[in-house]
Length: 165
Image (cartoon, rainbow, N blue to C red; front, side):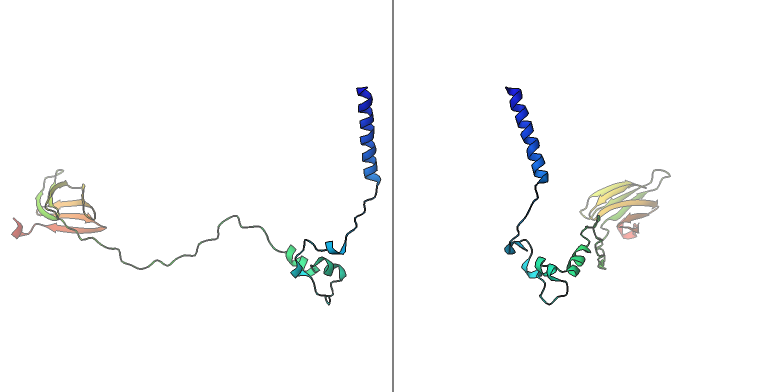
């Protein structure tokens, strides 16, 4: 019995498929449906020479061609940002606020004694740096009663004056 039911169902399915392919399809469009999904503002005026078909659909051939010519692809990269003109403001320089109070010159072991603005004392060898307000001070060269230091991109020569002894 189950086999007979399956055979009848398959024959009915084949019959429905054959009928669906052979039966003509007719769509009755009503006048109110023509342009239901088109914008009303794009309706072509009656005096255009594009024909009655273009007026009914709402777009003329030239409008369709212009729409098809639009490049809808976005660029694959960001547009370059406009270059801004850098303002010519001078960098604020911090004055060197240390004082040389002593030197010890010995080949390979030269050192300077520096006094900070707050009164503290620092001992620094040639080629070394110390931290002070405004940045690091690098001692580049040590001579008798004289030292060259690099601070803020500039080189300063510090000397021990006679009135400081």
